[in-house]
Amino acid sequence: MVVQHVWTPSVAADIFGVGYESQGDIQVDGRQPTPAEFGPVRELLTVASLCNDATLRPPQGRAADEDQWTAIGDPMEAALLAAAAKAGCADQAELRRLYPRTWEAPFDSLRKRMSTVHRMASGDLLVCLKGAPEVVLDATVLADRKDVLMGARQQAAILASRGFRVLAVASTECRNEPNSATTVETGLRLLGLVAISDPPKSAAATPSLPGRSAHTKRSPGNEGREGEAMRLVRVRQETD
Image: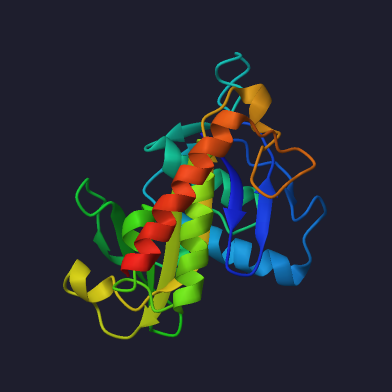
């Protein structure tokens, strides 16, 4: 699996690379991002790395099947770690040292999300959450404005219609250790969306993403799925 696109409320970025390799390019509108643009992308990927139980194993030998980075644990979580490495985020060992985990609510098929809590140097706690957009992009979970949530739902629908697996990522800070998922999974700030694909290795280096006319291929089938996805988003917005 490969992370190919990151959307935040302030900037969207394409991520290039193959497999679980830590090397790759990140671009905003076909160019290198500015420091101000890179900040939200790195924050999202750092939180996604903290709320994560996978690890990446570096190449072990000269054999073809050993001369590459591999995932240990959930492949989707490993793809998030690889994207974070491409963005220049701290590696997992350093993150665990800087932000030791103190509590977690594991992912399950009913909740469709995972939350972890980490102690910061200040003594306060950092809450990290990732999960399915349909459960995370909700006013009971996020404290963002209604227009931000509406925009995120639209982006999630478009990405899903293109065949991507989409995760929403959010965080907040607090002082008191939580005692249940109900108390910790509310009032968070949306960091953005991650679009993940599982393409052949040769295709992983060239994302095909919404809003990128230079390399986006549209087909009647895709347009139909995208239209249906947007219709479902509008229905949900009207019923909110």
